[in-house]
Image (cartoon, rainbow, N blue to C red):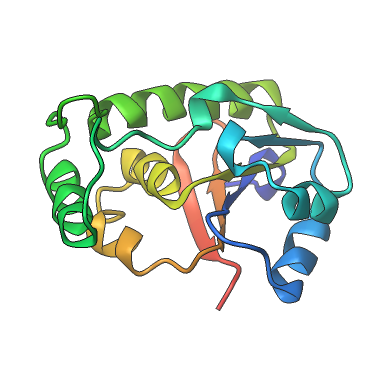
Length: 170
């Protein structure tokens, strides 16, 4: 594939404060637009990019359950919603529902900014579900082993097919 037609997408998993090295990675991206879910917009993320960030409500973290969960219940609930994509706990959102809303945003952005680099900030769960849409190997075990934050570069071809995944943070 001709690399000039590739669409590059940086997915920043922003559940915890950025470390200096991660800030540098994000800041050095020559992106035309930055998008973020509402709860992942933190002062350090905005400061790191030094540019206007447009909020995409559909990149918000999913609500796992309508009730509080203990740490043990949380891990079991995460495992279950990844294993059974259509399952949701009362007051929560299924993996399929969360994935669909996030993918609508990603596909629109890839079409709107075709051939350009964009940075997307979201939570690790949503990041994993977006990646899982294109490659099922991005699953619960992948999510569990991500760092917080984490940064991935996704490369798409002109047909919006995922062609490259690279972790930018070790």
